[in-house]
Amino acid sequence: MPTLTLPAAFAPLTGGETKLSMDGADTVKNLLDRLFMDHPTLTPRLLCRGRIASWINIYIGEANIRDLAGTATPLADDDQVLVLNAIAGG
Image (cartoon, rainbow, N blue to C red; front, side, top):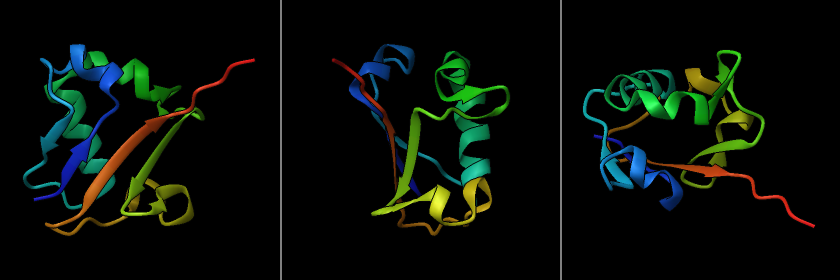
């Protein structure tokens, strides 16, 4: 089953968990649907107008899903999915 790693800043929204096993997720969309069903407070943190927010990057291994098939990207059982949020400062 794919494993999802979230930024530590999201841990309070997932009961303290930053690594989640996503059993049955065969695409990034299915993974996100399950994540939002289990942890609905993450939805506005990751989505903007129903799409992955521009400040959120999702990687499978070292590949950004924006360079693959987006949320239609298929997942293998041993895939490591990483969510990163951009940090800006000045």
